Image 1: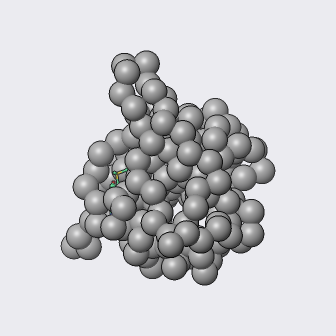
Image 2: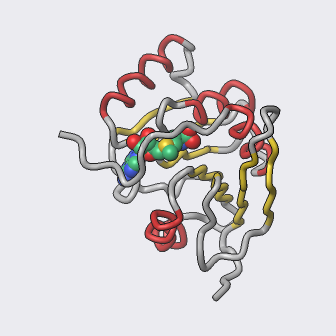
Length: 163
Ligand SMILES: C[S@@+](CC[C@H](N)C(=O)[O-])C[C@H]1O[C@@H](n2cnc3c(N)ncnc32)[C@H](O)[C@@H]1O
C-alpha cells in the first residue's frame, strides 16, 4: 500500500516547467530532482530540452509505473530515473536543482531536509508556494499564454534567512 501523499496531483503546465528550469539555469551537467514527480513532465522536459539528468521521487505507485513506461518509450533511461518513495525519506544530496510544486505547509516541513542535504550553490525552484523563512534569490510572476499567473521562487543554497 502506498503511503498517503502530502499533496494531491496537480500538474504544472509545460510552459511553467520550462520557465522554472530556465530560471534555475539548468545545464547538461546538472542533476534535477523533482519532489513529487506526478506524470513525470518535469523530468522529461529537463532531459529532452535541457539535456540534464533528472530524478523523480513519487509516492504513488501508479504514477511511478506510468513514468517508467514513458522513460522506456522515449528512450530516456540513460538520463531519467524515478524512485518510488516518500521525498522526506530519500537522500537528495546529488541534486544541483530541486523543483517542487507542493504546498506552503509542506515546503515548511521539508526545509530542514533541504538545508541539511543540499550542497552550496544548489538551486530550489518552487512553483506557487514560497519556502517560508527563506529569502528568495529571485521571484517572478510568470504569465502563461492562457493568461494564468504563476508565482515562481528561486532559492540558491544556502539562502538568506528571513523572519
Ligand atoms: C502537485 S503534484 C506536482 C507534480 C509535478 N511535480 C508537477 O509539477 O507537474 C505533487 C505530486 O507529489 C506527489 N507526492 C505527494 N506527497 C509526496 C511525498 N511525501 N513523497 C513523494 N511524492 C509525493 C503526489 O502524488 C503528486 O504526484
